[in-house]
Image (cartoon, rainbow, N blue to C red):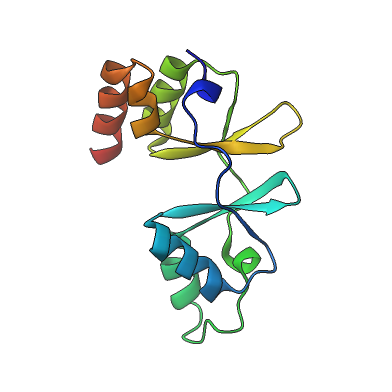
Length: 136
């Protein structure tokens, strides 16, 4: 089974120039630990709750002037929509991540895939092994 068969699409995103507070509110409302940053339909970064705390609060007590792009990571881990679910689950364990953006061949953002999504792909053993690597 391929990632495109189980991914969440479309996914919630924000832009680099969106106020950090708005991005954080979106993440809180949806109970997301990360949100993709896009430029049109291209993935350009990821913003995580950890980015906000460790790079945002640690650097400046006043976050009101910061934008999502100020704290995003531009080195983004991702998978492709035609990747095999078992392989992606294994890779997520090795990279110690619970979610990945899904892109096409031109790096256009197509959706997000989580370990929970991959469980639906009949890859529960690989998903369990990936989770074990993440929490260790």
